[in-house]
Image (cartoon, rainbow, N blue to C red; front, side, top):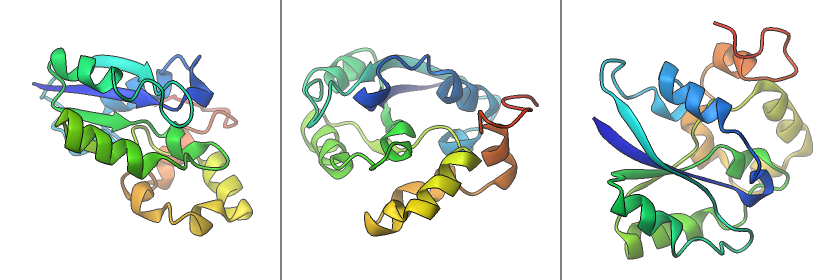
Length: 155
């Protein structure tokens, strides 16, 4: 079993986590590399606390205390406009100070978000491609996670 923590962008502090948890269960997006038979336990779910990361010192340490082996900066770090300008800072702090590896992204990026960001040009401008690799590869998943799609989150 692997234990993970998920930190979300504070712009989405009221998020229910449905897309992230669905991606854990279905093993897609950033969780595609885990075997379906291997349990994934989410030991923490916390917003960063707002720019530049008010909860950054406490939340990852709490997740580590409860056994987090890896902390995911949720897909919402990349979904908002503009993307979080502190991704690299959050990643480095958690890895170097808290001592837990960090992966960026959780659920597959929804198709409507991909279209909007491509049109706006911010992902290219902000060099987000390096973070998007594990969450933008499947058009099928992008369509499934698109809340404007009539088949939203249906198998």
